[in-house]
Length: 292
Image 1: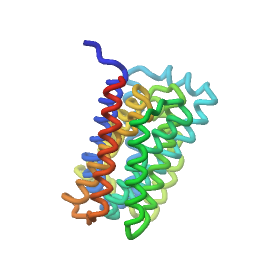
Image 2: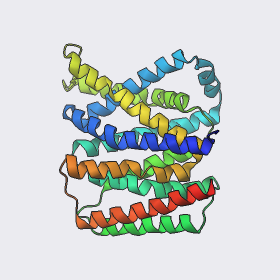
Image 3: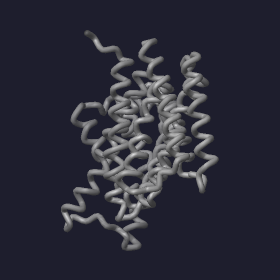
Image 4: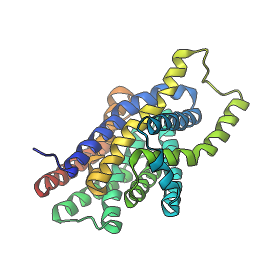
């Protein structure tokens, strides 16, 4: 039985979302002791290094060169590079400052933004069940927002940056890994300046004397690239809206880790909001299954 591109996209998005929410959260919280600023820098550097290696291994430099000649795609990739750097920075900041649950709120908002943007700009279809699921998430998000002690600004920022990133990447037909490589090259000057500042102020924890720590920091590359590649590939194959709803796996894993593993507070209001959101996800995914 041949698996459709849509199904492949759903599987890819699901794998990326789980990896992000579970393994990614544990890993980046674990290395946060070096400071979120340095984590962001090394995350960017080692992601770029791995992409250069994979592009060479799979002989994709010709594809890379063709994209460099396309001014429209380059402009969009420049914008997406700033969006993804902003998202990384906010996420690492939240994880480093015991705000995993608050940050996950942003990823709960993100799917609705994705569905809405997919409908608005990509003409992705909405039916009655999908509208109901979107409405439930809006109610859930509003209820949560009205019952938290402080507004989760990091979460709102992450939702905006990540949904905008996926919309723009969906609008251009660029191979996932090559697009990520160009984005990484665009942010390299910013990262290089940041690295110079870190070294100049003696705040650099990375060195080859402590091999174990160096290896742990280098892992920031694959820990970023694997889920990002899987999810963006899923968006390309199944659409922004469906992948956006699948992404609920990420904040759910973060919610559960924040409460059970990192002992962050989990109020009754958050629990009620959590249940409403997953009812919405169930309705949306059931509709996807019935119509694809």
